[in-house]
Amino acid sequence: MISESTLYLWALILLAFVATDMWRWLGVLLAHRIAPTSLLMKWINAVAYAMVCGVMVSVVVHPAGLVASSNLLARLAALLVTMGLMVRSGNTLASVVAGASVFMLLDWLIVS
Amino acid sequence: MLDERPLLSNPRAVRLRAVRDVFGIPGLGMFLSMAGFSAIAREAGFGLFEALATTALVWGMPGQVAMASLYLAGASVAVIFIAVALANMRMMLMVVSTVDLLGFRRNGVGLAKQLLSVHLLAITTWLQLAVARGAIAREAMYIYFLSFSVLLYIVGLCGTILGYFLVDLASIWLLKVIIFTTPLYILMMVTRVRDLLFRQAGLVGGIVAPLLYPFLGGWSILLAGVVGGSLVMLPRFISARRLRSRLRERGRG
Image (cartoon, rainbow over all chains, first blue to last red):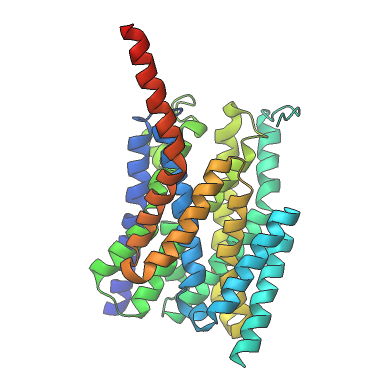
């Protein structure tokens, strides 16, 4: 027996699939109409980068779920430390590990 | 900067390179990011198969997390659809800017395979393509993309499985850090992209979006994208315009 709530969740998953892949399909259709070396293509790329970073910094500043209970200062400090180290060293892994450690330490200090 | 190393074009070597690249930072990042999503999904009441299906069908972390957390909050179907669509709208632009690089037409890829291929495009893959451009020959880019993205997809599904059970094993602290790591590593990947213009666009978008979020919600991403992208392109648009009017004058004279 499949419960109603299970069916509802599966319908939502399909809906999320459509809400995402409609953009991908639209992208395929549009791509063949835009010259790859045009300024418009460059602009599209720049907008995409701005959106990717916009989504990701928003996840840091306004997180959902578990991370929402953490301290904003701890998250911002971690982001700044990670970026600073990345600019100086160019080592992604080391920078992210250091940033995650700062996040853990500060969040623990501030919450407790 | 001139790179003197020859570009990889041998299919075998390109595939090997893709596998090696997945098992570096991108694979680790994707694994943890999907583990983080899965922990959120379980918290929201998803079963393992529901979490796996979401990863497999959406394959875009921000939209997945938006969907799971809104489901938990009891949001309406329309709200969930719009939130996921806005969180993943960037996919369209990512795809547009990638299709030529992959050379669907040059490689004679049919429409069905094109649509399947772009389903595999996630932020990590897109950024990796921008980094790999300097090492892989143009004609081998599609081979690189397929090897990289299919393997990354499998890694993401494995991360979803692990994350689902990690909730039983790990402390809240560890889960929090795992979830928090995803935006950090993606932002750091952007700093490795060669084109300064795109890094600047990212910086503007990253500052504008969270500032507008309290007022506009998911729409802030769209606005931040247009503002960031247009702002850094402004000098180029202006000089292109000048060039055009100068050419027109010369044509008249």
